[in-house]
Amino acid sequence: MGQALRNLRGLGKISESNISEALAEVRTALLSADVHFRVAREFCERVKAQCLGQNVIASVSPGQMAIKIIHDELEKLLGENSTQFSPKRPLKVMLVGLHGSGKTTSAAKLARLLKNRGNYKPALVACDVYRPAAIDQLETLATTTGAKFYCDRAEKNVPAIGERGLQFATENFCDLIIFDTAGRLQIDENLIEEIKRLRQRVSPDEVLLVADAALGQEAVSVAKHFHEAVNLTGIILTKLDGDARGGAALSMKAITGVPIKFMGTGEKVEDFDIFHADRMAQRILGMGDVVSLVEKAQETIDQKEAERIAEKMKKADFDFEDFLTQIHQMKKMGPLGSVMKMMPGMSGITVGEKEENKLKRTEAIIQSMTKKERARPEILNGSRRARIAKGSGTKVSDVNALLKQFSQMRQMMKMLKGGKMKNMMRALGGRMPGFGGNGGGRFGF
Image (cartoon, rainbow, N blue to C red; front, top):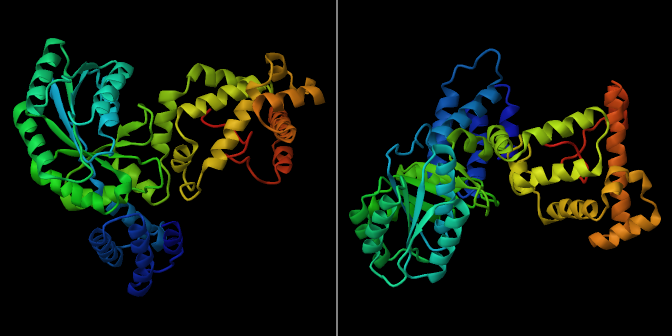
């Protein structure tokens, strides 16, 4: 998609021939992101019609106008302003989906999100009677999120479990009741009939399909089948932290008309958020998602600690203890790759195991230092460095490389303190510090 947009951006004039050529690349990029072929074709046809019929604003280049049209169409396709959740209290939510899609963890994640943002008192009801581990998992997650939990390990009648779970939640004054149902490796009639009966018995306000973003075009078939059976009110798209670019989101919303309301972006219980069509459109186009990045930083970063470290940096008094704190703050925001995808222009950069290990190695080296050594790295002689390398499971050369980079960073801070911006840029060789390096640049402060 990035190359296709670069080609579009360079258009000085929009004609039928060059827009068709550029949109052929966009269509290929959408198909490679697992967008359903029919959705990709119809999308490109609408964009083409708009581009050819559009009066270009004087201050905007034709190429930029085409990109704006693509962005706006993507946002409409993903469900602009369609993610509202029922305001009812008590609010009853039933989760359905295939086995392995992430229903059980999504139940706990949804409970945590609505508890924190909507001040709900949640209850989780275990309606998966086929997988004993699912009940144990949900019970553990309920404890973690502070939700009430109901199960009946002896009962196999799922609608009866749901009804008793509803009564339990009411008796415990819970105003959010989430029913976690069983999944299958594929859709079968027994599963469908069971969730139909449960739906009739508990009358949920929201019926959410939990779908794996990596399912690709198969996600459309799954969404259609469940929607026809239980009349879905929304979709939770999971596992958006991997290589999945959102193609499944485009396809499911376009073909079923069911809005995507939430998305899971990682394994941790906090890696879950409301789905924003405009932000997903930006991510698909490789424009990043700065708003989500800022929100995540606000939720996870200790503001007082951030201000303390910023002040130390201004005074060029930044030490390894502060550096370690920064690493811990950044890790709270999630995997490095997920954070990178939110940064404009970074979506095409892959942050793999190598980069993640580099950050872990840096953390291990600092943790192997004494408090005195972290505060005064200049005392790290040969024997101390050898001890740190052994304690962190790294090489002395790794310790030396980190110390060298840290020394350069401190030197830059001193230059900034003295207002010597030109000297700093000369020291950097005209480049800003890299995000992925051991000491590259501040993040979030």
